[in-house]
Length: 108
Image (cartoon, rainbow, N blue to C red; front, top):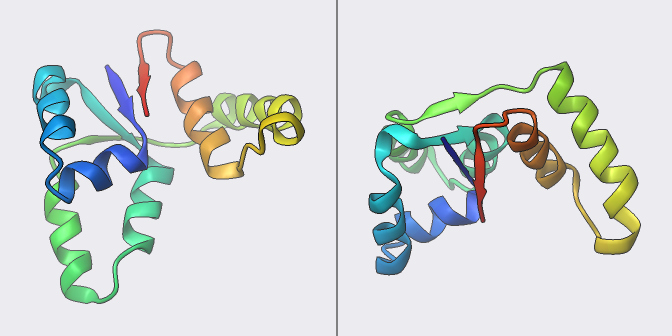
């Protein structure tokens, strides 16, 4: 299973061939989104038409929801990396999603 960060989907949806090729190599069945990624994608939409189009684009992917283990890992990441690397909350949660599932790889 591969958890893709928001920027990967933005690149693919904007038609970047190299990103699309990588996603094709991974395979639709092996790609998952964080609920944070879904929120970030929806937040970038300007109107209801764009929102509906985005919903159609991502409906084929499984969404990993935030649970206690993910929240705890995200807190740990913020503590460790906020000051040194400027880690933001959404990325900490996405990282928490990935690290809470040992069979998941993060693609950024």
